[in-house]
Length: 132
Image (cartoon, rainbow, N blue to C red; front, side, top):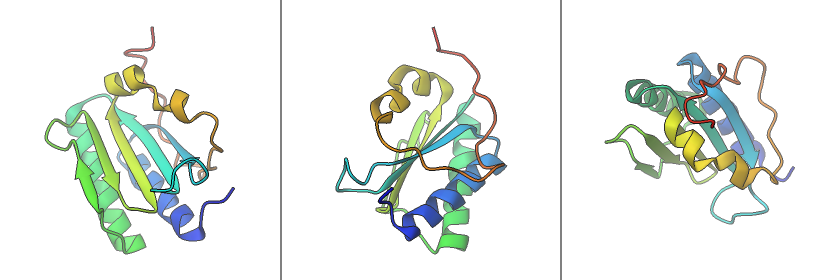
């Protein structure tokens, strides 16, 4: 794994924050060898727009408090379907469950090493809304 300690720290804080707000199936990937713009992706989902926003708010709060980090960019917040938080070292994707099933980011990044998350920071089971 080539992800820096700083990025790893931010990944763990983001995953813990998402888990605290009951995010589903939190996964992190080391994308440092595939992309030059970031080192890691954190992916998670929620069954409704309101919960997506709640997860995003908690991730932002905890990364600011525990990691001293503010997002460089925040996209998709208005719709609450797929919010992207760009912290340079890491990018966090919080998706509505339907978008997660449709876009399948796990399939796109499956060849990248998965970052082991602490027990209790992996979220709840996904609801199979769009898994046909």
